Image 1: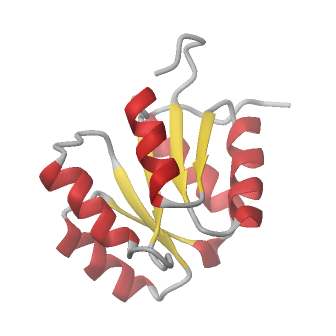
Image 2: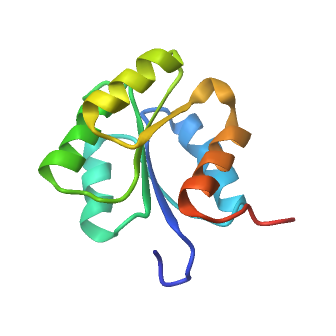
Length: 130
């Protein structure tokens, strides 16, 4: 958690537009948000901060998000919730999450409201009211 008391979400996605939209809605809901467009940026954030939740895009040019999640969990021992995020079908996402040993997934198809709702549920806080 940041010094401001806001829970911190780290997002990895190769789409700057997707990161921008997700960051906007999550910050509006009261979260601190770190974004990474590649593995180097992700590693940099992890070296400097301790996020409360990590969201990993599955289909990345450098590596699959489920593989990154597996390394974060099994090799680096990360204990915070890690979720896969993708527009792949729910059945495939559920299987990938299970095999990677991460905590679940969020479908991009469900939209930004579903993203905020799920993050709020996982981190135990309701969205900030306007």
